[in-house]
Image (cartoon, rainbow, N blue to C red; front, top):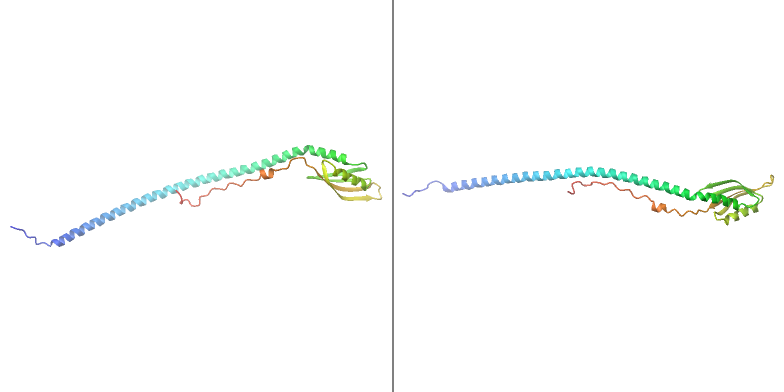
Length: 207
């Protein structure tokens, strides 16, 4: 005997499709939540690792800055030591010069002239003395001009005393001739630029 289905089959199919859609939607939502949570954990781990690297970089940069300061201090001390050594060497080289200069002063003094004071400022010599006449002073200046250790004589003051009869008092200057080589240490020993400190402008820019 044939069976006849009198139930509303179309409505049943509609309910089944709706249920399947809801199940698929729930599964998709769950998968999206799982994916988002996994991405959150992954990016959080990457950010934490980058922050850890940045902290380590900051510590290393502080250590490097201290080392740079020490290097700059050592460089400054080195330049000061070199400058002192150059001054000492220059003084040692100039020690025989003063002997020659005084010997040359005695040689250039003509008869009838004697000195009352000799002053030196760097390479400049100042002579105060008394001469029998102004011609003796001129002779003294000519001797200085022809000297090997003295040059550029310049007469500053000459006074003739009529009452005392001691002659003419004079003041003149001359330059000492240096035999030491020119000092080129200023160009060679110029201070080097200090090493700049390291910096981390954008810690999160690079990994």
